Length: 423
Image (cartoon, rainbow, N blue to C red; front, side, top):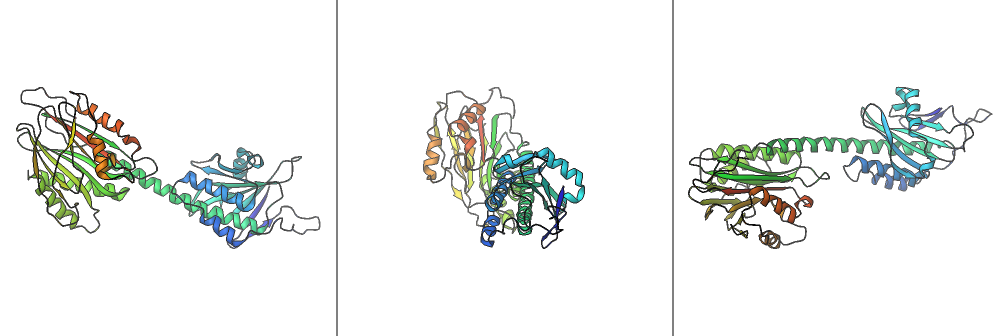
């Protein structure tokens, strides 16, 4: 097997395809125009998805050089099978042969500045495959394999393909870093959402959290319950602006300040005021919306306060749903204050539902219409909080929402009524 050893400026062909007189073969094809190469480079890394980047890389190679191209990705200690095949796949050598050739040539074959031309076996049609490592920094992510019917590439061709491989490897590195951050953010948020406070046993509570999907980072939606004195429970739902690790970290900070402030048993609007004071004093803290509901089953009432958040919905004992009016102040972190509370009746058997905007909002739709769709739902009488949440999530198709969804449902017990198990 002959290798095409490449310097940092240009590849130098060694030991392959020499003429009988000792000379080197002429270039089989001229280099592609610089404009086409520039367009191919610009088409790489349009997303932060590794599989998409590999597909873009293989397509770009085929557009520039013809033949066929694929990626032999390295996800562990050894390369896997071909991925992102573009062009005529029949031209590609067996992936196991490529992997074996790379192992045979030793570590230098995986160096960022080397490329290997894999000749076809004796008796086969002319041609072969150029194997260029996908290396960025100290990491090698696999091999770009390009094959054609003609002989080895010219020096400009090999150099251009090496440049594409280098740029593709850089985008793969970014995609993997992005995936690591997304996983960290998701782990952090799931850990936080998995351990909400416990409400008093006179209140049934159920919580659902649905991330927007694998194509987006986890956001800053959250729910919380805090026990207060005299059998009261503070219910909370909030939404930090943005997605990703930063949003999850800010969500944790808001949640911590809420728990600290709520322990002093202040009215909901004063809790929001203090949370806003703390958040606005931190320059890097992202704004957040928040809705508080202090539920007092003994008195059959609830007190609501909102920081830029959507209003809750009350499901009555006959299964109807209605929005509850609540004074809306500015989001937390703005430093503007101006929060107020409103008190409503909450009778035994009625269910209070708090949610983030991802549950109802749809692109291009007026928010009043979105809220009306939730209010139009009807529920069988006597259903528990878990059944109600399942109905809401299913009928609003929350699993395909365009944003993260956090929703909380709570139902009080009358005095002397047997409490349901705590959540």
